[in-house]
Length: 207
Image 1 (tube, rainbow, N blue to C red):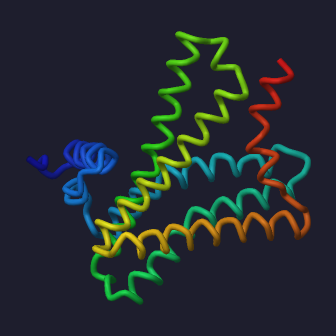
Image 2 (cartoon, rainbow, N blue to C red; image 1 turned 120 degrees about the vertical axis):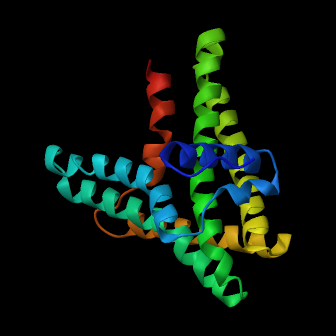
């Protein structure tokens, strides 16, 4: 039964919807609202993280690089909404788009929480393994594969499209993101996102 309305009820609905969709249950989509306010709430946690990180612009000496990272993060955040809206309109699924993108945005946290849980469990019970680059790489690979499936599944059930179209949507978002990162690397100040991604492994190796 879907919880009643209200702030606490809204949080419960979101969590239940995320868990159901994460387990491959299409009925989880019904726990999300298809309104601009609901989508804004889904974006709010990521926006807060990005804006807090933007404080570095005033604290670090390389303000141009910090501003580039902030701008790139904002573009990548809104990219799935832009690309998916284009396809939704093209496929005649515009009426379903808001509920879909709200669910897809919230489900992005599922992968993050699973990775954090796995890393924490490994650090507590097998600390030596948790520090190995092989473990970190395997965890990242599994997380990427699961995120691919989850976003594909949410797009499929959320927009009511075929598996092929859902795959096309996800690949388009992925390619658009890679293009943005590539431009950031090619144009001044030449921000290399791969350097930030590999930094945890470098720190572990140095320790």
